[in-house]
Length: 115
Image (tube, rainbow, N blue to C red; front, side):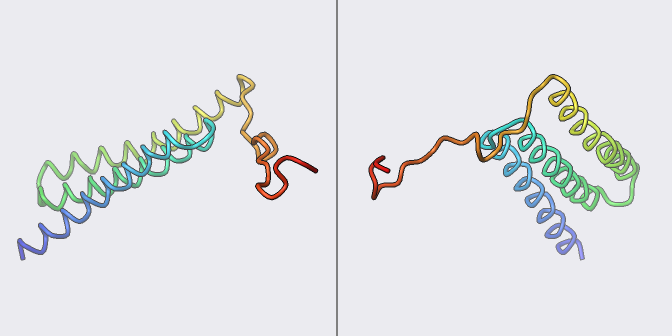
């Protein structure tokens, strides 16, 4: 039974680490503050939840698990609120989302820039 709990807990921890890594790559690769905030907010919450669930399984039913539940509740309330506050501050300061018409025009290889 202990081996199953260990396998499930490590799968949750590795899965949470994967989501946090994907979120970090998204923050680096996405074009504007709104899409970056979305990537960070969603993957941060999901990754942290998976890691905390994995740690709860490792800790068993103890005071440690109770503390991890409190951390989880704190993250569930603060992460979406922080993402919203950052997006609202960006909008209030006049920063607008990058749209498709803002993208550079790519020339077609067949026309070589001749229309």
